[in-house]
Amino acid sequence: MNTPVIEAQRPSGASAAPATKKGAVLEVDGLTTYFFIRQGIVKAVEDVSFSLDAGEKLAIVGESGCGKSMTALSILRLVPDPPGRIVGGSVRLDGKDLLKLSEGEMRKVRGNQISMIFQEPMTSLNPVLSIGNQIAESLILHQNMAHGDAFDKAVEMLKLVKIPEPARRAKEYPHQLSGGMRQRAMTAMALACNPHVLLADEPTTALDVTIQAQILDIILELQERLGTAVVLITHDLGVVAETAQRVIVMYGGRKVEEAAVEELFEHPQHPYTQGLLGAIPHLAAISGEDGKRRRLREIPGIVPALVNLPKGCTFAPRCPFASDLCRSDYPPYETKRPGHMAACWHSDKVAGGSHA
Image (cartoon, rainbow, N blue to C red; front, side):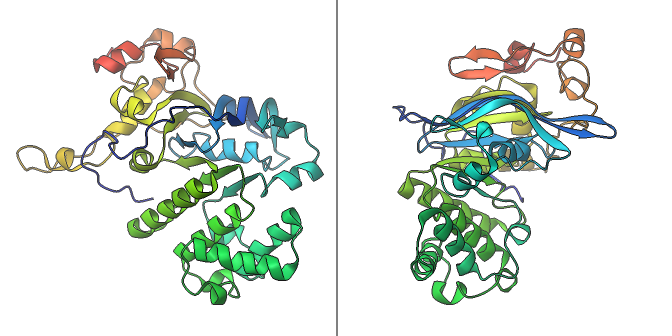
């Protein structure tokens, strides 16, 4: 995704966290997913926990390979087995543990009570079915609608996601639509059954900036209209600033920080989060006070291979604050500020900005 240039790091456009809790619709506790391959065990998701309230907008951020998408696939039980397997934890949707359901029971939930928008619609849409029939299929399956009524509802959903000439587009096939229209069709399909939870996995990847903004606006508009809780998976903190209420930062398959969006932007407690915030393009940093162009800050090194994670804190090899303690023991995940959790031995130094 092309990250939009923004003026400052503080997310002035972000929504405030809801003042009253409506009750958690999704509760993930200790979710752990491994892949068992010839080279060893890939720890794709390690002990991830979070809750999502009705109507809430939660963002999960991190670089590619940090476990964001695999967390979503694990929630939906779409991990390929073999070689992958969910080895621990629970995923409760409206109090029902999805990990204990039979595959038949899970099919009734998936696409109905909880849905997902995938990164690349061309690999998720059926190339031999028209767009309208693909949306109608879920309505027939989950809502027991007759085909004619379901197709009419599909056209209505395409209109809601602002596809022009929805009745004509409903009869077309995925290859006949542009990338932006395919992503809108995926959004219409995911929301057709009014799910309680929507997982949006990089929903604007490979789209130009103008279309990105349109797709996000559509998702948020429908989310507010339908009351759906949204988990937005992204690596773009500019998007997070404009759309989310709360944010989780993942690294090396683990959750390393969680806070309300404004709190996280203003007071990062983990060096990885600080690095991500420092890498956001904004005009003051690019041009400098003297008008000269500045190089964007970057996080040195790469995300470690999940099959060969370093001992201790997984971010230590890339961290300017790392000490011997960091390299030997993984830090506890604990409260650093009110409502603000992080896993770092040196959060005080991170907040102060001084290197170890």
